Structures are given as C-alpha cells and as structure tokens.
Amino acid sequence: MSNDHQFIIRLENLRFTAHHGLYPEEALAGNEFRVDLWLAFVPAKEPFSRLEDTVNYERVYEVVKAHMDRRTNLLETLAMHITEEIGRDFPVVQEMEITIRKAHPPIRQFTGQVAVTYRKRFTNPS
Image 1 (cartoon, one colour):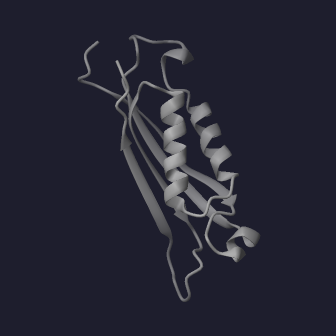
Image 2 (tube, rainbow, N blue to C red):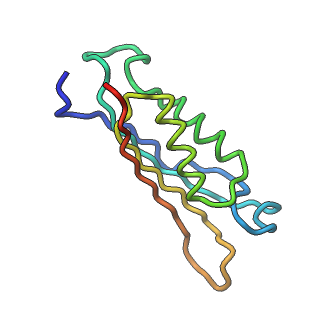
Image 3 (cartoon, rainbow, N blue to C red):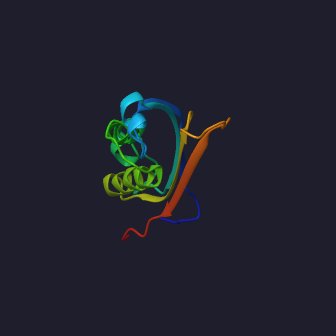
C-alpha cells in the first residue's frame, strides 16, 4: 500500500476534572482540564469496513480518561504517557499530537489557561 495518504482521527474538547499538578492544593481541590488530540495513520488494508481495520476512537478515549483519572505532577509527563500507550495499542499510528489545558492554574493574578502540547512521530516497523 502506498503511504501517500493518511487518515486523521481527532478527539476534541474532552473535559475532565482531575488532580494533576505539583502543589498540594491541586491534589485536594482538583482542576478543570481540556484535552484535544489527533492521530494520523495509514490502515493496514483498504477499503476497510471493520473496526479492527482502523483506530478505535472509543479505545483512544478510554486511554485518555484512565490517565486523567491518575494523578500526575506534570502535564508534560501526562501527555507523554497518553501518547505512548496509544502508540502501543495502535501500531498503525504514524504521528500524534495531544494538547492538555489547565483551566485554573495556581498562579497569582493570572487570567487565562496554561497548556502543554506534545507531538510524536512513531517509527513502527512495517
């Protein structure tokens, strides 16, 4: 199969209340997080009509949710762990990008959000 095209799957504006962060008050109170991600892949065969021939975005969501439910100090680490697990679950994925936004960071007199974006290209054996 030619690699001159890709499919892209997006999960956007996923909302979670979670307890990520370095500070004790973040562990107690939690925060609102938003997650956007996209992944690019070339299916093993085309045309495809079975879920097994594509990337199951329900499973992708389950991975994100499981990691959001586990406290992690740094958003950078969280983004890397999510990306790595999705890459292991779906070897057809060639590239992925995830952005995690923290709605209310514990910064005095700060208005806005903070976000971490992580992008990875996978070198999966063909």
